[in-house]
Amino acid sequence: MQRSILSSKKLPSKFKAVISYEGSDFSGFQVQPGKKTIQQEIERVLSQIFQQKVKIVSSGRTDAGVHACRHVISFSAITDLSPLKIKKAMNGLLNSNNISVKEVCYADYNFHPRFDAKKKVYRYLLTQFNSPFLVKRAWYVAEKLDIPGMRRAASFIVGTHDFSCFQASGRKVKDPIRTIEYIKIQKEYFCFDPEIKVIVIEICATGFLYKMARNIVGTLVDVGRRKIAPEYIEQIISSKDRRLACATAPAYGLYLKDVLYE
Amino acid sequence: MQRSILSSKKLPSKFKAVISYEGSDFSGFQVQPGKKTIQQEIERVLSQIFQQKVKIVSSGRTDAGVHACRHVISFSAITDLSPLKIKKAMNGLLNSNNISVKEVCYADYNFHPRFDAKKKVYRYLLTQFNSPFLVKRAWYVAEKLDIPGMRRAASFIVGTHDFSCFQASGRKVKDPIRTIEYIKIQKEYFCFDPEIKVIVIEICATGFLYKMARNIVGTLVDVGRRKIAPEYIEQIISSKDRRLACATAPAYGLYLKDVLYE
Image 1 (cartoon, chains in turn blue, yellow):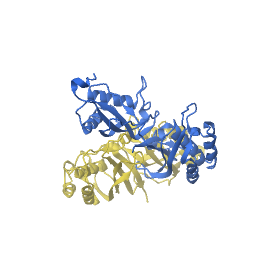
Image 2: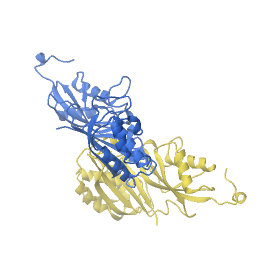
Image 3: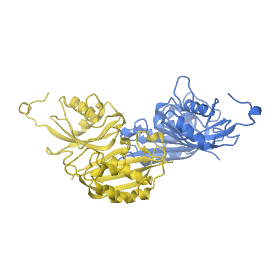
Image 4: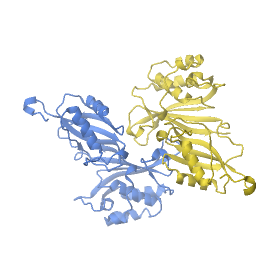
């Protein structure tokens, strides 16, 4: 029931929201008929709050199983509700504890979550112990990983390159050039069980081709397993050939940490 | 099929094992008819490995929903399998990813996981943000907590006291005196979402009465919410009256961190 602007004398307001979700129970972010997705659940809640059909615009899509700390979306609605009230209503109406709204604020009318994004940060969690607290949350790799080797390999990936080698096979974009600002590989504290550490690969880039983060991780892990030498990465990148890079890392270890704007 | 010791010329070997589990899917540790428990799952696996009925002895019980980083058990079996092989077989045969065997080693024939335990350490996780990564893993408390006040309250609990006030109502033990060595309350790094922190209450004691850890946490949280003053704790303890202490904290925030021996 979109009210006519003339009759209501009100223009729709534009909002930006930051969403966190545990992706295990969802078939990814984007709406798919007959499947439970994050977008669908958020649009259902917003349509209920505003009593009008609301479509969201997203900063990107995530695959089934992928998690997010700060997934940015926008939406417009004719409403008098404050951003804080909207946030509380969303959290109250969401059916699933697996989605949480962190922030809602007003956005410029021209704001576009995807086109305006300057950088994205992904984190990938690996574990060397099959902890019950990491099921569907981290990739369990049994072989001892050579972290210094992985860091050396990462140093060849950082920078501006044609990243066709890390793009999902069959996919093509006009411009496969992206800039990776940094790749950090570190052991991190694990509050659920301080006896173990998780290995985190954090990647910050101006953009990611489809499956690029998971393909980089899969290749770095093969360096860690000493299946390929760190220096071989240069050859993989210059080949622009997906077949030279290694298998894609599983979705459930990946976390969209943040989407950064100006 | 217990083989006679005379005919096999072998005595049973005694093993100590350390188990980690995510308690959400279980009706607690101890075997209960018709319910899925951790003990039942471990005994099923051990009986399968040794082709004989195996009963375990546990360092203690945990309630439904409680988690463990290092729950110590022991068992005896007539076997030639090495501890490492037993550990691998257990992890291979466990039906659930929610239980993991960390260690198996030989134990002295007289070793008893409960009677020989000198100290136990519990951790309790609290969150001030309803993160999807903390569902069934931490207690979400919306009110801002006064951490210094909670630390001051904890200082009255540490030491040797009659802890009847923190014992589950209706329960009685002959000797309700225990020694709490320390209570640490700190904000910890959260690798699933570094934007947030978890508040961890870690309690080390010579022993815990039934529900004592969760009753201490419930009372400390009420201090944090400024419902009761830190100094009131002294009165609660000296009363020896469960009704003066506060509501029991939910099971799903509690983690058995370790059981310590000589």
